[in-house]
Length: 517
Length: 81
Image 1 (cartoon, rainbow over the protein chains, first blue to last red):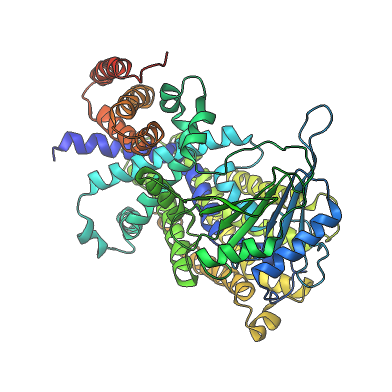
Image 2: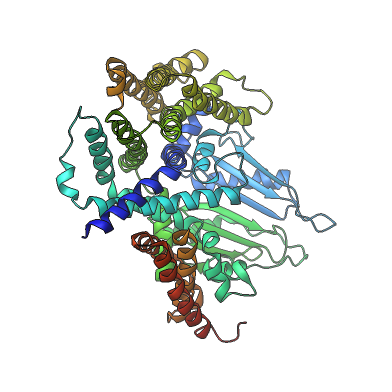
């Protein structure tokens, strides 16, 4: 490969990476936490029972149906999602009232039901793991369409950075075994290369599939060319297999019994495979009952079974992905979300995500270390740019993890009944992050690293202690109960705290210039 | 600039042509073009940055964009526009 080509690729890699590095760090870290979203949800709602009561899909749906008939007999739509395991631990119901007289959408309501009493449960108000997970594509405080664009552009930069990184690098396997510690700039380069190569298939998969999620937004002109009049709506109607839309007949007809429909689904799919049940126009002659299959497989979308809601007859069975491009799309999205992953694979996803995050962080630090070295050799003058990048690095690479810890601290410290507490948990996170982004401005670079690293160590290591002081869902209870989801959260926080402490200790012991270079 | 905006234009033009040409049902053809578009975009960005001068990058992106836009126009599905 010719040298000038490689040089221009190196230039592109450096600046593409630097320009959006901090946004990417945020996206990858919060997204990685998202692989344990429901586990974090559980930790953030300590009122939840230790072990979930086992219940069959049919029983759970019957409980949900009873509640809906009781609370919203005239609703336009009923929806019941029985507990189906890790991704969906609760019995959830939703209903939408009929459109108002002026044609506006009817009111909506959601509830989580206790599977024993059938009554709605009241857990503390929290954004939980879901909010952290959502941040990686919706950010926060930003309208979602704008957020999708920002995330999409950053992701496109990431894709370019991965490909250019491969080109300038070229020697994948040799570097796999190359790490030269304590060599300043060389070590940072080795670390960046090693992390980049270590999870290369993951980096590529997660980046490309990430772009596919909102591809219809980013690549809207491609759709508009074929669907000039109907636009995206027309394309989606053709391209996504859903239930055909029908209108209510406005003629009353009793809703068919659900049990035979579930039995039919069981006959086709196997036991307890129904993910949710969607009832349109219950009590109308044109009612539809739509059962969706749980997605245990790679594909993100489950098959549908559509019944006539009055007679109970099967109307249609919709395949998950009826054509090759559709299979490719659903498989990419499924791979990205990893909902099919068992515990072992889930941890692999988590660590791969951390490796991606660390590779981005190491790349950002490498940029500053290189320029520091040039400065030390007298080959360049001190610049504002270097100082800014160094400060942003500290406030992001250490500051963002501390902010996430602050989110968990806020969850435990705010009273359970506090008005608007879910919003304030997120505010706590971003206030903490803002402070830590500002803090390095007032400190020397070396001091700022040391102080924030020790703060991070304390913020994570003491979370299990705080948990023990404020709830009865601490390690002393969760370990004997064998509740591994909750125990693993505390243990992971402890491990993160220790890891930060080790780094803090190493940095503290080093001379200032050596510390990061 | 050339890489981001010119590259996007070229990607869109190429993808529309592809979606028109592919012998698939139209929703599948569009989806295929969309799935491939990001790889194509990354490729054009790399190419633009390897060009020796910004001028060459602009011309190199604009020229195929125009050709592909014409192709997209010529192969447009009948009955539209």
